[in-house]
Structure formats: structure tokens, C-alpha cells
Image (cartoon, rainbow, N blue to C red; front, side):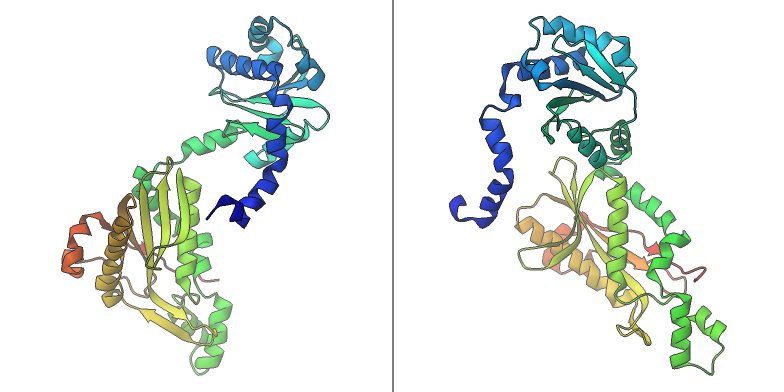
Length: 369
């Protein structure tokens, strides 16, 4: 399809028209003083170490009249006490500090970005200088540049995230989180719902005993709840791109796709559960799954078939994980006990080394509410 016939491409052009016109006409960022100051700020940051972000403000008029000896004046700026002890400085055409403050930047990258952009709506240009010498700049309420983070907190939070090779560590931490009441309660029918079930199904039975006997009962379609919970946990703790329900060429769907931070290596997680859930109407216990054949061999075979399909699609698939949430009433052996390559068709066994059965994620409703 030609781009001219693509409505999505046309929509994108309309959205970006202002930016495109500004960059290709006589916008501030196309002028020689702007380019010179941008380069000097980058060079100075590389020469003078700093572990915090700085915001340099300058009026458009002062920027257009940038002094000829800006090279030395920029170094003087970066060494100035007021620059070192304040987050924001307003400078003139000679890069002398007119005003400064050490007010904290708003928390959260999006809030900080909006704040920086708002400072430039009155003919002010803002240069946001990061410790790694990348610079974002803000003009007329718009943001540009090469930076990724806007605040030190955001950068520190990202640096604490774990890479894809630490997935097993993150999932071990997630197992611990499943033992916390505020986590596991979201999967189970609440006590009020169990009492309603008792009234419908077994009024002759003691209500408290009925609630205790059925506290393992999951909400309807619990797989969606499990998938979203583990997906969100991974997103919060890892430097990966997390995508839900990716469609393969054969129209099968991957529950969770993980791509490493550079976008090269691909992993996926297939989510299953065993236990008992309430029916769609909420009137009685409905679906019940056991480990066999739900997990062994059906789910094992499914994951390996997905790996085969991804390889046929020329995807850089590394591993396929099977994650099973075990909400069975009784404590029972791991659902992957005894899994082997014999559980998949012979023609698929060549991919079995890419299959990983994760230790079951045990979910128990210890204290129903």
C-alpha cells in the first residue's frame, strides 16, 4: 500500500504537522545560536561530572544574541556555585545567571515533562540536561531532544529494574507477593459471595462451614485476573517490553510476550490455572481443572507448538514459559511433575529445550473477607 493511500499515515502527518513545519522552517531549534548552545551544554556536562538533572532557561531574545565567547562562558556556568546548588537557572545572552531556584522537579516523568513544557509558553527556551549528557529541550510548550528521563527519581527507579535474564528472580519475588492478602484476595469469591451461594445451594448446611469449605473458589474466568496480575508485576520490576495477547500468524494467542530492553530477544509466558471457579452467573461452582490432562500434557504441548510457530515466523524466540496458578483446595504436587519431551509430538521434540515449566504459583485464600 502506498503511504498516500494509508489513512493511518495521513492521520499521523496531521498530528505532527506543527512539529514538522516548525523543524523545517525558521523554528528556534534551527538557528545557529540554538545549535551552538545545545552543543555546548552537552560538551560541558561530559567534561564536568554531575549526578542530578539541571534545567537551563533562556529567553528567545537572549538566545538569538548568544555571546561569541559562549564556549568559555558555558564552562563558567557549569562551575558556578549557583548552578551547582540549584536545579533551575535562568541565564542571559552571556550565560550569566539572572535567577535560580532549587525547587524539586515534579515527581513522575510525565508530570515533570508537562511542567518543563509549561515554562516555555512565554518566549522562554528550556534545556533539560541529564547526568549522561543527553539533553531534552522545550520550546513553545513542546518537548524535543534525546533524553529518556526527566527526574533523578525516575532514572533511579529504572536502573533498579531487572533485565530479562533475571526473570526467574522476579518471579520468585512475585510468589512471595501472592502470599499477601491484598494480592491474593482479588482472585477469590469474597465471603459475602460465598454466603450468598450457601443460601442458594445448601441452606441446611452450617454457613460458616460452607464458607470455609469453599474459600478456594475463584472468580469466573480467573485466568484473565492471573494474567493481568503477573503481567503488571513484571512491568513494574523489569526492563522489558511487556505485551499481552499477541496474535500469531495461525491466529493463536500468546498470553504474555516479553521483549528485552533493546528489542531483540523474545520470550513468552503461557498462563494456566488449576482449581475451581464460580460459574458465569455467580450462582454455583462452575469450572474445575486438574493437573492432568490440563497441564500435562495439554499445556506443555501448547507451549512447544507456540515455540515452533514463532520459529517458523522467523521470530528471535529464546524461551517459552508455562506459568500455572495453583488454587486447588488441597496441597498437591507441582503440576509439572513428570513433564518430559514425551508429552509433545515427536516432530516438536526438537524444540523442547526452549520450554520452561515454572514452579507453580500457589494461591491460597488464607483469610477470606
